[in-house]
Amino acid sequence: MTESENRDYNEFIKGIWRDNPVFVQVLGMCPMLAVTNSAINAIAMGGATLFVLVGSSFLVAAFKKWIPKQVRISCFIIIIATFVTIADYTLLALVPVVHKELGAFIPLIVANCMILGRQEAFASKNTVRLAVMDALGMSTGFVIALFTLGAVREILGAGSLFGIDLFGAAWEPWVIMILPPGGFLTLGLILLVFNWMTQRKQMFMEKVAEAQRSDS
Amino acid sequence: MQELFWIFISSMLINNFVLTYFLGICPFLGVSNSLETSFRLGLATTFVMLVTALCAWVLNTYLLIYAPYLKVISFIVVIASTVQFIEMLIKKLSPALFRALGIFLPLITTNCAILGLAIFSTNRGYGFAEGITYALGAGLGFTIAMVLLAGLREESELSDVPALIEGTAMNLIIAGILSMAFMGFAGLFSSA
Image 1 (cartoon, rainbow over the protein chains, first blue to last red):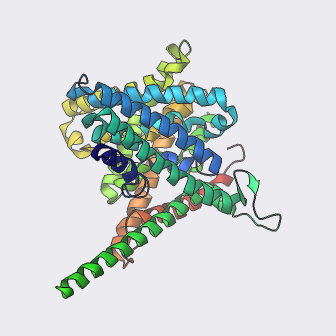
Image 2: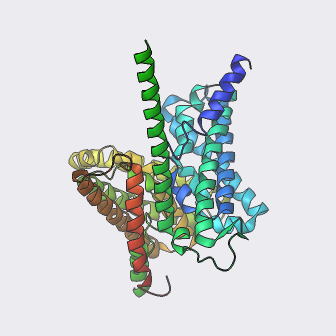
Image 3: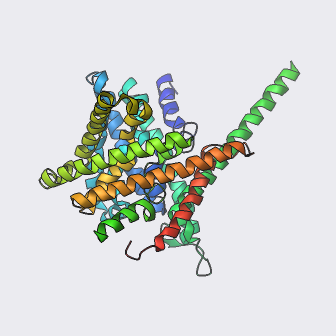
């Protein structure tokens, strides 16, 4: 791998695990919780966010020289809002059923702080190529997070995945999981697992460091 | 009149913006560490919501019937400039209030509860009086949720919490339990 390919790869991969927008940075929570009562809704929301984030990162990185510093936030927001409008009307034309389910939450992608955060922190300071890689990585991480939450909630709350029945008639669905409290509880528990894994990794690294010290 | 009352109760308790629609989660989790600031932020948000409802009604009546595709862009631009304008106005008229609100005033622009309010009330076709009532209820509901979580968090500071669960994970679980409690309001009236 050449150096620039390596850099691309790094920018892409960091959003998936190390800097995962949802599990690590705790950004973009509103759409995250609101539309994840089924796996298919989660995927649709993730797809729309991916489109908006990649599109606006591309434009912001391409126009960064012409955007005056003082009004940059407003410019970013207008660019984001344009892409959100495109995504809104595209979903309405292609999959009206899903669009109806997601309802007002598609326009609300504008207020997703993760998207504005990436423009401010990354796209406005880097080349188009790196900005797109970063946006792709971040939104893939976001899609994975949405899908995890949506799948857990749908399996427990409705006993199905993508609408396909998993457990048969004997399964008593945990209705609470597809209702609002289930969203908070599931995300809280997933964050707990993440904390636990980070803590274990830290303890492991400390042990390694200690072993190295005692060796020398 | 009766209908307005139900809109108010519904947006405040039954369909609480934070605990049922998951709007405004960022400030809800981010700045709810003290009762005092949560209460102030809640009131500031209520105020901005009232102004936004007014603007949304004007836009909806005079602009969006001709160009519905401008909805998202026009709302976000109007909200951002209104918040900026209110900030300057308060600074000029009452410096004390301005200091009390501090950084929270500009941050309200990125609160999705504000944009959500504008979109929900236009989607439901609310008129002027209904829109304002809806905004008042939603704002007070947001304040109630913030104050409740802040109170619980202040208590948890004093108790012995396992290090693993501390922080966002615990706040989310607390919010889940609060949300369950708010589901109890769903039986208040049948046509929610």
